[in-house]
Image 1 (cartoon, rainbow, N blue to C red):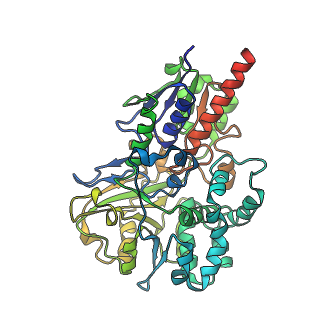
Image 2: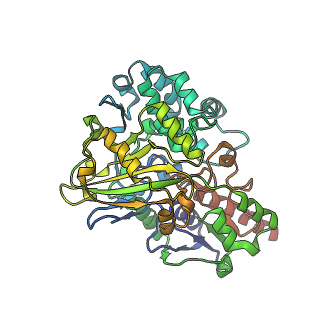
Image 3: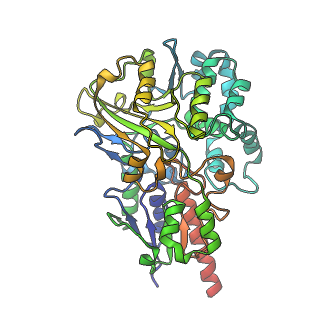
Length: 477
């Protein structure tokens, strides 16, 4: 009997799940609703012809640091990573910027009196990235494989980021730098667990970098699809699966969708209790995103910002705390924290000769309809006077706009659900990938280890499905 599985959704997690199944010898079909695979890892001409923008993620520490992606040798399929000279720039109102180098040994020049404290915080995890990444990019185990390392992480990760910054660092410059990295968490920096992203992403920066893929995020998707093709698997695009009853002839069905979508697709196959759990899983905050086609690079007051592909625009620790707390309270910050990428400084293939692109977003309440454009651009202008004069065209993607282009981004939520400590551990239920239906599994970023382009949700979901299938086969033999 042919072992047949299907994957619904061709984001990085769905493609990863399909690869694991294909590697195990299963015949796999992948169905993607959009015309192009990749989910949030797509590159599109969003503004003008010849300007290639990342629809979702633009900078990829978790992809280059993913244990599963690393096992696939994706460079063989054309994926090339570009590391900017500095990993991150954090401009300040005095016209300077805090620059964070990938090499921990170069920290002294930019971090000054806090260089030793920074190395003490990030070094243990960066130096043991292979073990650390396998621990954090998986379901939370009862007993970690490296308990001392994870205990050290836990002591820092569970603290509010504002408290850790003040306790760890003396200078306002380095406190601001850490706040910008921690703000990737989508939490208020006064909340417990908001330090986790700061430490994890900081360690990744020094261990594997914060690179961009040459040609854009679609290069990651293209490499994953090429890997699948070696197993004879093709992705069927423009194939929206409305009901899982339509794929009833598959022994395993993995769904790279949100809990709400799964509820609609598989309603009658799921138990009442499990349906209730899915319905209760909260969405995370949204993002307000703008893509720019530009006639020149961004004119930063701190010219050293041109050394970094990623720029954190938010000012001081206190300002970033206010911005993220407003968002968590369902409000809109006057001075939002803005995450910005400027890939064409390092990859000229993304725009016509002499032209540039920029990618920027800020955090907003889920489903927000408030126009943040002027506030977002005011923040960039604050540190780069004349920025607006460089704009040839812009495309604004509100939370609704993002969702219209990728149904997984419900209300603009790019994290697959709430990222507070409780819902991070239970994504979306205690079952993690398994559902109440033996053949159906959830493999999206709504499962452990959560958001980011790393494929680990799909990897672990597929591994679980295969192991349970083997158990069922042995019991029936």
